[in-house]
Amino acid sequence: MKLEIFPVHHIPEVRPGMDLAQLLQDAIQASGLALQSGDILVVTQKVVSKAEGRIIRLAEIEPSGFSESIARELKKDARMIEVVLRESRRIVRMRGEVLICETHHGFICANAGVDRSNVEDADSVTLLPKDPDRSAWTLARRLGCGVIITDTFGRPWREGLVDTAIGVARVPPLADYRGKPDAYGHPMNVTVLATVDALAAAAGLVMGKAESIPAALIRGFPWEESDADIRVLLRDPQKDLFL
Amino acid sequence: MKLEIFPVHHIPEVRPGMDLAQLLQDAIQASGLALQSGDILVVTQKVVSKAEGRIIRLAEIEPSGFSESIARELKKDARMIEVVLRESRRIVRMRGEVLICETHHGFICANAGVDRSNVEDADSVTLLPKDPDRSAWTLARRLGCGVIITDTFGRPWREGLVDTAIGVARVPPLADYRGKPDAYGHPMNVTVLATVDALAAAAGLVMGKAESIPAALIRGFPWEESDADIRVLLRDPQKDLFL
Image 1 (cartoon, chains in turn orange, yellow):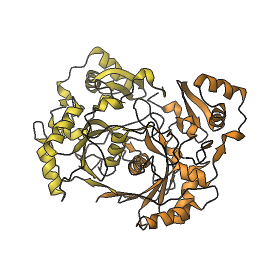
Image 2 (tube, rainbow over the protein chains, first blue to last red; image 1 turned 60 degrees about the vertical axis):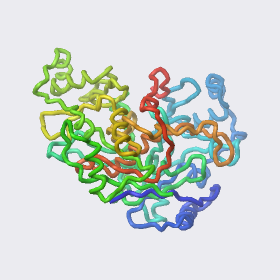
Image 3 (cartoon, rainbow over the protein chains, first blue to last red; image 1 turned 90 degrees about the vertical axis):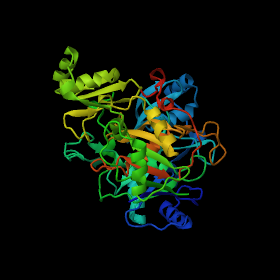
Image 4 (cartoon, rainbow over the protein chains, first blue to last red; image 1 turned 45 degrees about the vertical axis):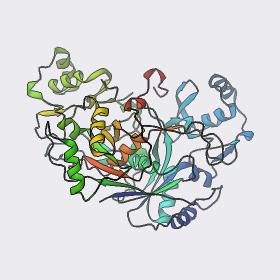
């Protein structure tokens, strides 16, 4: 059984208040596709945030003294830093020109997911959706498919960014092989796979960063209905063996 | 343009000295596939290591005093620890029952990639290939396609494992968007994407862990010839903003 990943073209500029489910539905059709049972729609955070009005005009931001100070240190726009801090539960690292934050959702990423690129107005930034799981469920209910919302994250130790899941509806975030035998009947060492992160990365391969392809359709991946949310992917810092 | 990912079935039990390129060639054909220009073959470390004889019988290992001591601490087989230490340049973390190591190649992963699962003999373990890029190039030259060799790695902060590239031939490891404009003509913040890690994760979606599917064929991903090796993905620890 092969896996297919289709880019979803023809998504127009998304503005606050637009009906994203309808836009995606139309774009899927315009791309010559029709949703089938078992399909998973992967949508980048950018269009979800825009539809939900999670856009901030920097001109309207009054930076705090702390933001001004960090901005000088990092040679950044203090208003941008102010927005990043508002979106952060804690600063994980501050080094060079990058601010690694833990967002209020618990994601650890650069600038708490606040992003300047692919926004129409050069003076505006997008924030991550307030509740990406809820955003995913809204789309999943309307479209009748599995939904994953992604952002492009960096990683420790390895160069380069990879599209990563920040919200999920219906698709199980993890595939648990614990206790199952391997091909030789021995218990497997590989235990729990981060399925939605692999699906997010796979979809990222057809979602051009420079082009306007903010969604992809994955067909042929077997999954069972789940109501688990993305938090199952967030490791308790106390239990993090890597850090 | 859609992306297709085909599982490669019919790969027999791989033993040291076997001609892996021929086995893969035959398996691709037996799976009803034929290699096309631009195809990328993703192969798990396990079969590469087996073909290259990177298997160790634990009965033949004499653990050092240090290995014995760590084994007691971690409640592990001292012979296994001995093999892990031999494969390691340094121990990154030691906590609970897990040993996170930096391998001699520079990969940071549990047990330095030494693995007990999916090995015929329950008393044997596999090591990572000595030079996964060279292994990838050998296959790429014989098969005439791009090749990525993968292992299943854990990650900081996030639960679940994801298939990750440890060797590459012909396919560019990174896609560099620096300086390129986004859809609105503004410079992009998303700069460098870890293409081969995304391809590895995508292939992992069709490579069953319990079943014997150690390879997948990716079709429809555009790439340009590259001779860059996997080391471009390994971040200089001094420059790691995340840690």
